[in-house]
Length: 401
Image 1 (cartoon, helix red, strand yellow):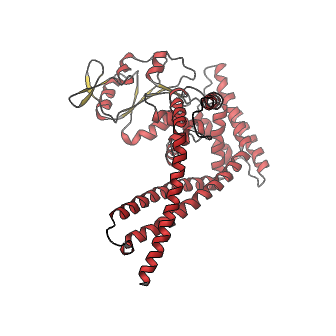
Image 2 (spheres, one colour):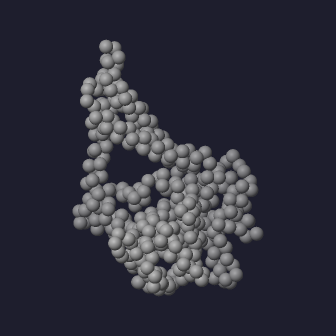
Image 3 (cartoon, one colour):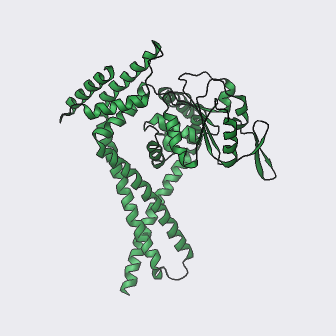
């Protein structure tokens, strides 16, 4: 009898906890459902039109034009809508960052446009950041890298289309080769259950796993309306504000690595916790649905409810800790912003020297290496203001040396 009473207590406690959590989830979903039309409209418009623009112009269009028009038309949308949080989760973004995509918001938006757009992406990439990310992201899938100057690029494309390999076409100019039109237009036909694409007067079987990426090193290309309609143009060109955000992340990771490590760990733990919670929820519903006798005799159900209760508590605690950590990281980042501002300005001073003579060319990767060296070699100080002063002086000297 005592065992049954104990199980009954655990069962009531567990189901009460699940009931409260499910009610809260339903309330949140109902609220999100009310905003879904406006949020989907904004996300679709962002994917379709924002790719070619820089961060400041994107923010201006969304906040001052689109949001204003949506409110005037009384279309419901989330008051704090953000493109990246609507279409992606932090775990995927973290993976992209590890693969070479910069961690600033502008780059995250670009990553989403590249991976979620319906048309193949054409990336304006003078600093080669997009190329680096694509190469790392698609390496495990057998990425093929081609150039229009290669004599056999069409043969490589044929094989990739047929076997579903990703392809990166580098060094695209302002005019695209007409032979690429069938791929860009996705001119696929279905014949007897097979998907076929005509490429250079040859029928090639088309794999749905095929991916096509195009990059150009031109910093300000002028593409025809036809090219714009065939591709999704995405501007990865780094400007002062964007580079400042990247360098800010770099200096904080070097100076306060424990905060970034804690943030990464929390992202992974929260994602794992939410996944575990979903599995437990599905298991509880399955056990309740399949229960035939007394619930008090179902030991597995009682144990699963207890595990779910503990996991839910842990995930809630991790979310609260995450918010506190975010505040700490933001405070630490802002303290180092003068270093990022100075370093960003110096890079574009170097970059503008190319206008004087084309011989003066400086890669962003080499410059970031120089900045990391300055962080490592500059004089240390327990006082943050002095440390920033020493770092700025050393890096300025290193650039002009």
